[in-house]
Picture (cartoon, rainbow, N blue to C red):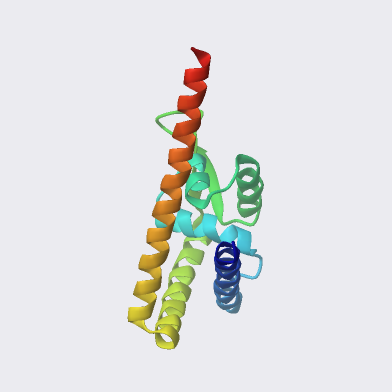
Amino acid sequence: MKNVSAIGSLLKRIYRIYSNHILSYLQDKGFTDLRPSFLEILIYTCENEGPTIKEIGAACGLKKQTMTSHLNELQKRGYIIRKSSEVDKREQRVYLTEYGEKFKFSLYDVLELIENNYSRRIGEVELERILSTLDNMHDKLNNVERDTLESRIQLNLSLDF
């Protein structure tokens, strides 16, 4: 049990350091109105042209209420705009505004700077190893969640008959 809680705690602390580094560099570039909770949404939106709200939520692991609140704030601050999908008018897509596009270029500069900094401190080989280990762990834990969900569904189906 100690290992699992230690892993969770370390991942949380590392993410906090990482997001604080990003925010600090972005503040130096004039983007002073961001919170750590906005970063995942903005990074995903910068990397994916016009994603749906559902896609962003799934990728970031955020609930609908949290997504709505964060997107409202990001829209109010001028980073994004929501538009109805041309395919399905009930579905909204998220796009960067002109200000959001300026942010995107600054973000990419900051991420490159951080990557270079981390590579120097930790080493490229070690960073690749860590990434591989975390990817492997994520895949296995994600499969456990899927297996558990499938088991519950099968149990419910068998109880119905």
